[in-house]
Image (cartoon, rainbow, N blue to C red; front, side, top):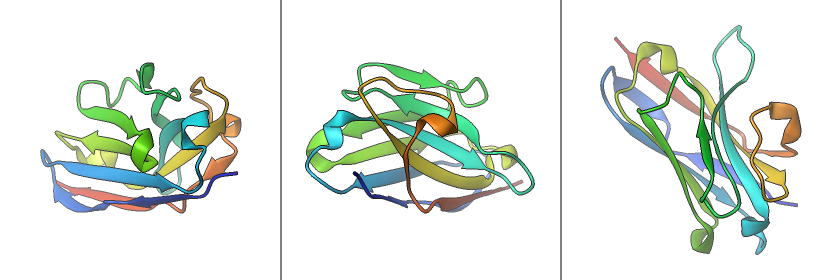
Length: 124
C-alpha cells in the first residue's frame, strides 16, 4: 500500500508554469506505475500523463502533449508534473495516482491509490 501527497498547485497567469510534486510513502515506490489526472468542476476526472515504474515509458493526453512533462525520482519516492504554457482550460484539481504493477494506465479505475489533490488555477 502507498500513501500519496501532492503539492505545488496555485494560481498562475496564462502562459506561466507550475511544477507539481507527489510524494509516496513506503519503500516500494518503484513497484508502482504513476499517473496524473485532473478534474474540473462539473466534469469527469481525466487522464493527463503517466509513467511506468522506471520512468522509461511515458504517455500524455493530447491536450497537454508538448507542454507538460512527467518524471519520477524513485530515490525520493516522488513523481513530478512540470506544466508549461498553461492555459485557462488547464484549471482543475490535479491528482496523482499509483497503480500496482510496472506498466502505466490511462483510466482512473486502474489506479488503486490516490492523493488528496492540489488546485491549479490559470487566469486569462
